[in-house]
Amino acid sequence: MKNILCFGDSITQCVGLAENHRWTARLAFLLEERFPGRFDVFNKGVGGNTTALALDRIQTDVVPLLPAIVLIEFGINDAYVYPWCRTPRVGLKDFRANLEEIIRQVVSQGGHPRLIINHPVTRRRDVHRQGNGKSIASNLRAYHKAVHDVCNAKSVECLNIPELLTSKRIASADLLAEDGVHLSNQGNRIYAGLVFDHFVRLCGE
Image 1: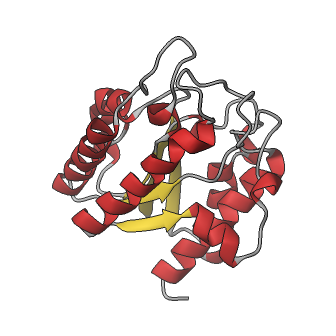
Image 2 (image 1 turned 60 degrees about the horizontal axis):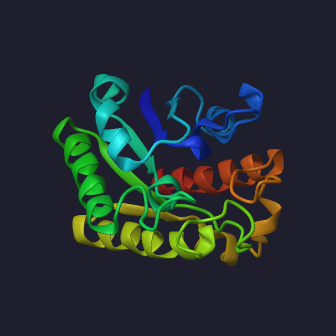
């Protein structure tokens, strides 16, 4: 049995949905159906988390379950600019450094990190109003690139959700809940399928 840890924010935690509707639970079901008894999936998402907050809990939420494959999904909260601020919660330089530290800690304990580039979010400026006057999608763009750059620099596999959606001709709107950021019930099903495909390729099947 190999552990799969889903380490992220509210996109991973999926608060508000029944447990069996969350993408992590759907992933576990798909894996068990395809590879019986081979994987055990753990949801270690916490809503509102940035990479800085993730480092505060990595020793309690992740390290005890290593070695494992660790799906690392952060960025939306890091890039978020509160309405009363002009700067993001976590700047790009610190965001990159935090991802690299998460990777270091996972690898040092025999784990296998995979970074996830988040799905596209709403481009409307009147939704999740940002203090710098931009849309949340605009603020997030540079963080998507940072995840990609860290993957290249650290030779870590990347699950590029936007690219996967394009390749499968899935509209990003099909994923989103009413708030334009989180995953809908259908979005969780699609997201689970995209991650599952990664494991099928990983297992060479």
